[in-house]
Length: 169
Image 1 (cartoon, helix red, strand yellow):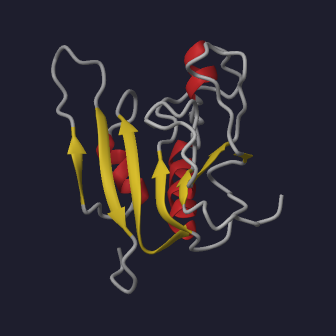
Image 2: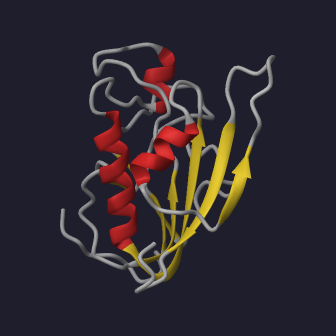
Image 3: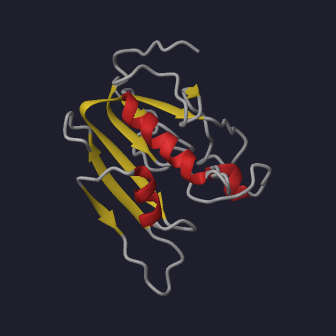
């Protein structure tokens, strides 16, 4: 696939999945990307990206998006896992999850314009937030960390990063 990008596409969802966080699942300014397609799931969770590509190696031009959304898979399983969670939401490799997250974040950063914003969502189902932030090795501007309660199985966290040139962040 070539790197052609229509100029009205200035938002990137780097692993769109079923577009569950979107209020408008067909936002005209967003390019929805995922390495999977899934059109036989329940009607509210089909995975139908505009372009099929892996978030670790996106065939997109450098510095081409003002906003990037990065919501990678949060669980580790073998690639051959056929359970419904793995099928609907994707999985990280049990052995390579650190490099996968690092490569994915770096790719999102590469396609983000200077002074652009990257929104990162993480659910600490299996991997602790501090471990993921250590792998990313960038400091968020702000975010929302849900506290773990004894009756909660997982917590969802949201972070905002901005690509400020020459600041080393």
